[in-house]
Image (cartoon, rainbow, N blue to C red; front, side, top):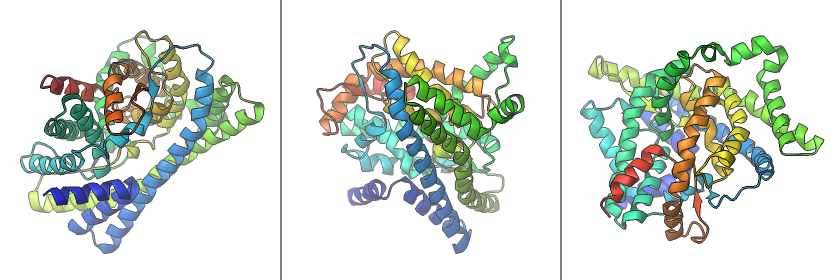
Amino acid sequence: MENIASAIAGVLGNLGSSVLVALVMFILGICFRAGFSKSLRGGLYAGIGLAGLSVIVNASTEVLTPAIQAFAENFATDMTVTDVGWGSSGIAFAWPGLAFVILGTLVINILMIVLKLTKTMWTDIWSIWHGNVLGGMVWALTGNVTLGVLAGVIFLAIGSVVADITAKDYQEFNDMPGIAVPCTTSFLALFAKPFNWVIEKIPGINKINASPENIRKRMGIFGELGVMGTVIGCVIGLLARYSYGAVLQLGISIGVLMVFLPKTVSVLCEGVIPIANAIIEVVQDKFGDRELYVGVDCAALLGHPSVMASAVILYPLIVLLAVILPGNKMLPIASLAIVPYWCGAVAPQLKGNVFRIVLFVLVWTIPVFLLASAQAPLHTLTMGNLGLADPAVVNSSFDMGGDPLGALIIWIFGLFQ
């Protein structure tokens, strides 16, 4: 069993997300009788789409990070926590319980499907790393690998349930039938619906319609995605006090992001949807009305025009929030990369309204900041124990350091130390 677990862990760590997604989708297609050609094409297009998304998001992060950092340096702050962003993912591949969280999650997911406790098949193997980071933090806190594995598996099992709850919203809004998103970002959607209900009850505010379609209608050419992205990018460049040439270059880079990201998501959909349809057909043949969902990476939620429009607006606003929020000790730079995924997670519940998405994410970021600051000592201890960071430099992140569900589970398991 341990040898099998180690082999799975090795594959996960070495292949990377896009190759792993392509392989899993191909195997699913074959298993669910989609045929060799459709399975191969579906797997490759899913992998290509995900790789394309990574290239575009990483490229935009690369050009935006120095601008946001320069913007942030204009404020005098005494923040003591270093933002390592997704550098914390190294915990997942370095702590002793890695392989057992992977196997445990897959076994529990199968049992939950058999017992009809979930409809989501956890085919997004790559995203299991989130549970492993949590497991590593519980291990560092308690000194117990078993507790770490249990915490990681519970965290991911809850993700399957959340994926079921949010699946229909994501399927309809993103036009991706048969999919679900078990990744931890889906957790935000549970709060976005009641938030939207509250907004609907506020006179005046409930009339603000900042959907991409309405923005284009009211603003003409400046509402076009490419033009809007370029303008927003230039504004960020000006706030960073860039030279005029650098301002224009940043503007064009953000324009590229806004135009090509939705097109790349369509490639991912072109691969995933045929495989999902094949699974639906087989399940209906075998189980009648039984419904199952294919778990996909949260990157599949980035395609709607409102998502990146909201994210780019949020970058400087979140930095400003960090400066003025009492109790916050971390200036976000690297962690801003998660903001588009937050926006994608709540866009369906907020009807693609950019104003509501920006407002919700700003509110959501408040507890994330406070949790990331509060958990910085544990975050630092975990990365230091694994040789991933200097233990003398206090660090944290939005993704797992500030995750509310993860923080709750860590607190519960901390009672056993």
